[in-house]
Image (cartoon, rainbow, N blue to C red; front, side, top):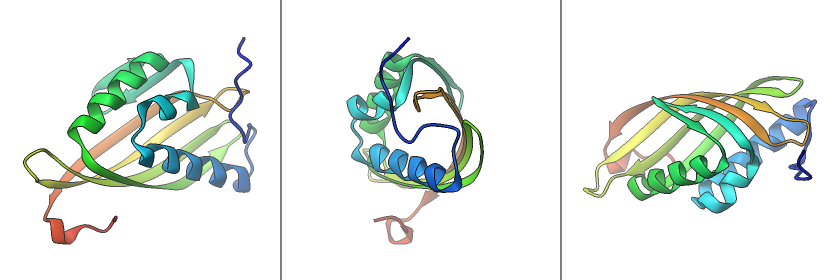
Length: 139
């Protein structure tokens, strides 16, 4: 049992679901793996593209590598739906690689939270689109 809590707690209302999504967007935009991983249970389960990740420590390693590759990362999330302790979220983010090539990544996430408001499961499907720097929407 953990004493960690990440408000708002489920079951979610529309208001608290929107707050939770905004908190996730804000945290991910810090690009700080140490901060972001604290939103997840110690035994969280992820599928991110083709990667299967288990546990907060693996999340931290994954995010560290992600943001070493995906430079100047900027994310937007949108609540798609919610029910009790689950949410569906649509997102897009932009980033460039070390060669200066820009991308916009689109996707959907399914989230499940424990009773303490920590995310226990995250399943993400993501596609990348090469863009020109002048086509960026997220600054």
